[in-house]
Length: 330
Ligand code: A3P
Image (tube, rainbow, N blue to C red):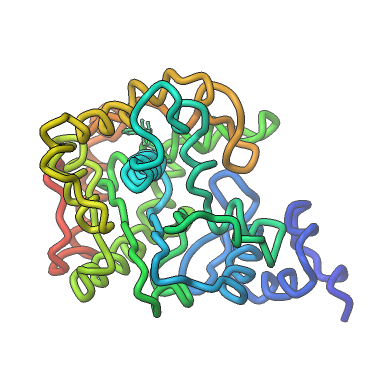
């Protein structure tokens, strides 16, 4: 039967390869937050275009042991982690000065996403010009990382408490959705979030995949928390630099290098840069939407007591016993 005879694909989905379209027709699907559908693919919920690029990545990406992969579920501090890692790893080439690349490039251009940039619309991107260590970003869950998880490369996962991540996601989706589309209500988004139906969710599975691996292979997987980084940036930066194999020397520490990197990559500085107020670095999303409030506990301004109770129960049920905890929750 010709694939076009199968009915329920939207116009984005129609542009995909026949192989991908065929696959989509066999996958469970739900209404998306911003797109017509989210598909359950390899155990997680994602958009059709992401599935095509993840398949290309899985089929073609060759990992090198020197690679550094920055992983997260959306709205957990990905942009921040990319900026910090780029600054740490490249500090011999780029001192924190007026001409630092982070002052003129968005972190997502310096550390490209595997699925949104490199393998989006191209099954064989040319990665030969990447300087070593190559830095990549991804939202792909750990079990689907293909050759990356079999290699000796370094993976850093940034995790944020699900209450703030939800609120951040809700704001972001409503900012980047097409104008012609009605916004998704807080209630509807929250219900889907608690059921795990959110990009790259269920969020608890995403977190646990990396969490468990960080316990099993601590030399290869570092698990960072957004809230810890807000609270004690210098300590977390040292930890990150040590893990990556780019430790700060005593001289650098005394010279205030860590504080300088923290300041360069800090929210207030990043948000005000022209490059981050204009332009688009991920898909057709405006960079300015990547920088909102960056506060811990902003969920208190949005969630009702019933919502707090419901999400707390989800966390207890799904994360209880794993050792993964968040200090900032009710
Ligand atoms: P809020 O919506 O709560 O403000 P991601 O980068 O994964 O998309 O995450 C986006 C969240 O990180 C947003 O949270 C955004 O404001 C915050 N953020 C962006 N840059 C940051 C930075 N340099 N430091 C701390 N938080 C940052």
